[in-house]
Length: 267
Image (cartoon, rainbow, N blue to C red; front, side, top):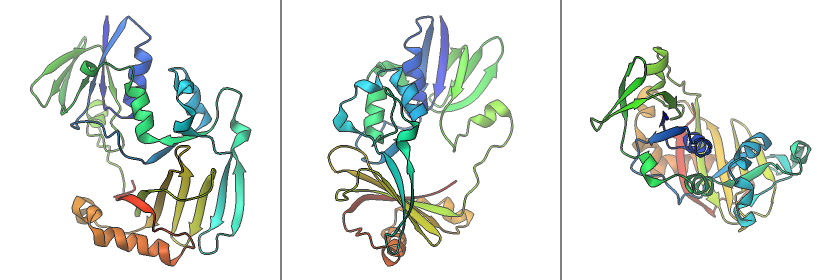
């Protein structure tokens, strides 16, 4: 039996594990540096038709309809007047089995975790180095070792381990932008709304059939390396309020119902 090591317990790593479940000649282990996976956040994710085709291979179409939304359009508006600029018809990409879908990220994670045995995920585990010969010997932060036939690096844009494979420095570049993310409980539109402003835009879309909406804004913001490495800045109320004030001053949307607010740099 061939063994596959998967670095990262996010959507990509969990999806791959679901696929491997269908092949009895392969075994796998997922290595995740976090203590657990957050399954309570209400933030959303948009899934293209190609994504749905892949997810339907592992039973995504059987998810309760209350957990998903099927927006038919992306509508573009001016932020300071809500005047509609244009729209994109999403139904042109759909077929009978696969539709453009929005959902809570946590709901997608729960679906992906459903068919993965708990003992297949090792939390609090970080890859430290590799010995590559006839097979791959992976060394981890808890002093454990695993002999692997294949290694998949699926731990995101901030991966420290892609450089172990490529032997190049692969660092993401800051895009001089900051994202402000949250959830809205009162917004009456089942489609995706994009509001365009000067040096910012924000997106609102439904993530369930229970009037829950994802909100994310991208605002231009120059920050130096010291600021970027200081997580306390992005968690401070003053910083969050300063970003929120920019949107309030330049938009006709009411942000009083915006909750679970977080900010992070865009790379």
